[in-house]
Every structure is written in C-alpha cells, then in structure tokens.
Length: 125
Picture (tube, helix red, strand yellow):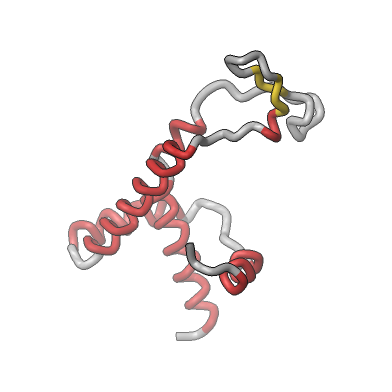
C-alpha cells in the first residue's frame, strides 16, 4: 500500500471512530446549554458566580468534574471496545460504512506532533 492510500484510510478511520465512538456521548450533554456571550472573543470577559458567591473567570472554570470525566471516558472506551469487538460482523461493518460516508464530510485530520511528543515524554499512569 502506498503512503497516499495509508493516509486516506487512516483519515477515514479516525473520522469514523470519532463520529461513532466519541460524538453523541456524554460529550453532547456537556456541549448542550446556553453559550455565554463574549465581546473579547476569547471569553476573558466572562465569569461564573458559584453557589458560594465566588466570581470565577470563565477560562479558569473547570467545565467537567471528576465524575463527569470518568463517565465520559468510560463511555468512550466502551464504545471503542464494542467497535473493535464487532468489526468482524458483516452487519456492523455495513453500519460503519454508512457512518463513514457521513464522517467523510468532516475536515481532514492533521498529524498531531504534540501528541506524539507527549507520549514520548510521559510515563503511563
């Protein structure tokens, strides 16, 4: 297989996995809701007031608590596992192919060199 075909297939698989296994998870719940207005464009002019009356800059607010992060990661890992365990099923592959056609409309992925760098430096937790 030539390099162009490898890139094309890797891009298609990345977009399909993202659509099937990450999108429409708890991430959508976190995405739902009212988006605050920012005149600065970077949300530096937005703040949150918590139940104790603390005013916290939007850029400093944690948008996920530990429980939400754990639930989101568990859901995504379970979907990736299910995908991998089901890929030999012809009916499942047909569904993957349908989703792949939709995912193909997404922007093309880029090689994330910072990801590779982090993996090279970090010890697994």
